[in-house]
Image (cartoon, rainbow, N blue to C red; front, side, top):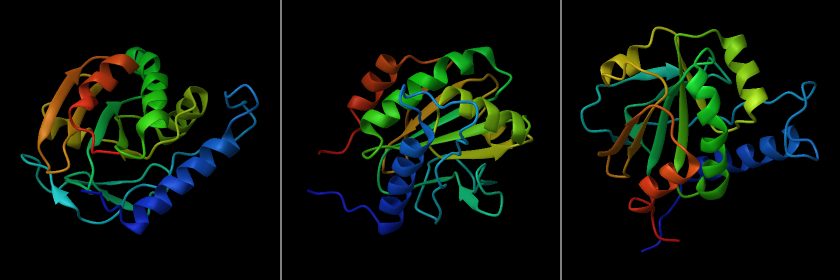
Length: 187
């Protein structure tokens, strides 16, 4: 059965591709002078994630947009809790971006920047070349609700809203790809 992707998600994916293409230099690494902004954040309610109360956070790229982190939108989702001050996050984020570039059309990626400063988060994302959507959790409330007390911490939620994978600490691209393999929708 083919998966129908709502037009707003196709638009978000197109924005992400355009941002990624415009933000990279010939070497594939953004230069310090080129602005890199995360892709537009997902909006709308979606399928509730089991065990998560209604949780809404502002989009990092546009604080006027509220993101419902307590829902998935028709496809599996990777939720990564991180901070610019976190050394292991700095190691992990480029790997997550590589997986996003490889299979991001079949899986939604959302980063949750916790207990951080917006300017430092943007600088870190630019340096790491990360383009997938990001939300801003200045108090760490979403992470605390999930009992995620370390960063980085990563969840995979299937498209039915069940948390099917959780990993505390940095992931490699291979580890994340293997974890996602069982939960990817058919091509």
